[in-house]
Amino acid sequence: MWRERLTLYLNLIRFDRPAGWLLLLWPSLIALWVAAGGFPGWHLLSVFVLGTILMRSAGCCVNDVADQDFDRHVKRTAQRPVTTGAVSTREALLLGAVLALLAFGLVLTTSASAVAWSVVAMVLALLYPFAKRVVSMPQAVLGVAFSFGIPMAFAALSPEPWGWTSWWHAVPALAWWMLLTNLFWVLAYDTEYAMVDRDDDVNIGMKTSAITLGSADVMAVMAFYALHLFGFLWLMTPLQLGWPLRLAWVLALLQALWHFDLIRNRDREGCFKAFRLNHWLAATLFAGVALGYALR
Figure 1 (spheres, rainbow, N blue to C red):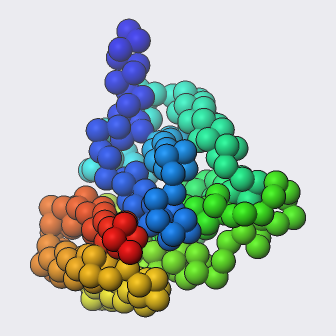
Figure 2 (cartoon, rainbow, N blue to C red):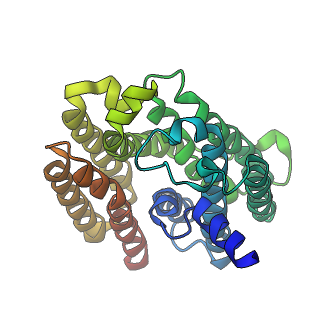
């Protein structure tokens, strides 16, 4: 019996689909390396890796509870545990709360500033499932929420002493610019994701960027990629990370161009493949940053 419940819980948190937490992880690790000027140490690396996995899993629980009445009308999500009733709303929320508390416990081992910003990140994560009902581009809300590991990374490395009054000053302007450029990447890949479910979302009245952008969706996705990649290059160039950064940027650009080929016909399979493979683009940029610091 317990094995069946465990399987349901693992399905609920998308344990077999790591692409979701990898999309969160790579930008956070890039920020961690930039904030530390190189390898940040095993403690912070562990906190951000484990914290990212836990928070993404908690987010899945909340999202599925919020969307259960919609998910049953969408082909891709109709068999999710909460939607089918295999996992109750109470169970899902309790599991999400436990996972979020574990993640919060990890943040408590860093700095007061990081703790303060983690509360903001939590609020944004809780708002996103409901933004899809009222905001025409809810992917922008997701973009901010999914990018909040960036200011948290800088806050975790802040030299400020323990004290709540210093939490704002712990995050430099560079972190907010990095968050903005990362937001465009989230807009790109989550619009690809929304393109998969567009027909179903129209029928149930869900608001998404794919619906809002209409026939301009493909060009908008490519514009989002361009804003992300050129913004990233602009921010990272002064750090003098040399050829690893330049090579990684070119490889990431080639991946973005490949995505155009995947989504230009707007078929479900191509759009979903583009979304699932997006974490490789950020992993490539992280490799360029990490190697650049290692060879400096």
